Length: 274
Image (cartoon, rainbow, N blue to C red; front, side, top):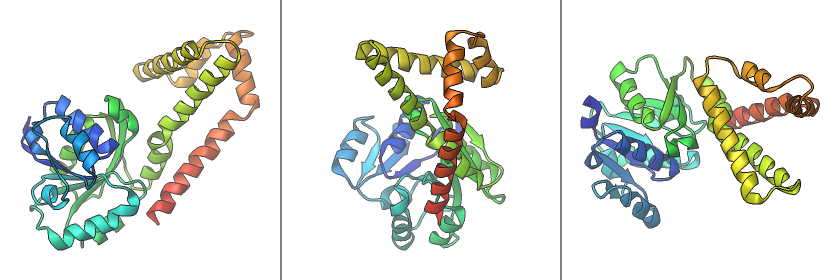
């Protein structure tokens, strides 16, 4: 309950900011203590529709000047200019916690842009946060107080699960596995639906079968103490249909394909930081 007394501000009102706001509202955080700035009138209209008491504006200085937790939710390419404009124009509250959800942008860069005058935490969320099933990796430097960590975890916990990381470099791996990960599963569902339709199912039936199977498998894996390999083995009867499908996937090098994909995503995250 103590965190519901804090004002949480957002610079940028896109999908991820909206997901966090929705989660906070659902968790009971007062709408009057949520501030969001976005330059686009359409985005402000969408944000205002979430709750009549949300404080929505076009000026980044408005949340930056009073938020206890300031969430930087703009694109990585826009982040430096947004921060530097705030540093020049705004006297931020003492003790304000800054949380960046920009992929690849390091704490070193963030601290440099703030002139060393900020308590900064990095977060890598993912889009299932939109439905309260997100996965967020968080990292803070050793000197960041526990109260700041708790406030960041409170905000992200409203969208799903959280995981604190031991070193900043792991955020690039979180980006590869879970930040970009939903797209991998969407691609699998897309392929199942497309090929199921080609083989004779109606598009509606193929979509339902693909999406509900993905949902069920994810829930089963999340709620089971057994590793995915064990769950897979239970479905894979020797000589059966699943065994034939798994053998075809393994013969096609599915593990190498995913290894290449995750390395590519990790390396791109590092490039964004550079």
